[in-house]
Length: 176
Image (spheres, rainbow, N blue to C red):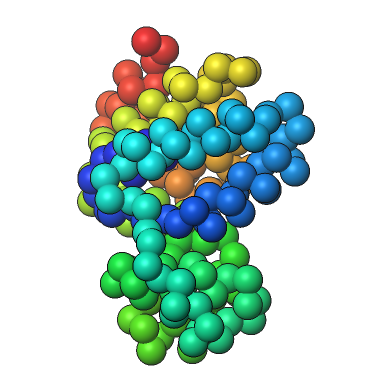
């Protein structure tokens, strides 16, 4: 979320995408409530400029993907003329299906690496801000990086660690 506030890219999502991530989080985190996640969703929509996509629905039935439940994601990307879809589920968005629309599916680790190439300090600062918002429980820098690693962001974690040493960004990880 904090990366979306860097203006290094234009984050886009739909209410349907919100519904999907909220269902997933509630399934995996029974300690959270729908009310809490709805608050998060509303904050996301309010704080990321022009993020909420509407008007894509008529495209859904024209799209073929391995999982028909993912067609709404590509439809929203086409509607907004997005170049990429950031997803852990690359197999759900095959190159052959996306190519005619000029869209590419990119793993979050690769996406964040590209952002680091654009502005390493902005990405490190966004990571620090995200870590500092974690209150229940709070996480040390190492615990936060372990969480990122466990979600599949191996290269991101390695690069963030390297950046902190190489570019003297260690102060970004201090508690404020």
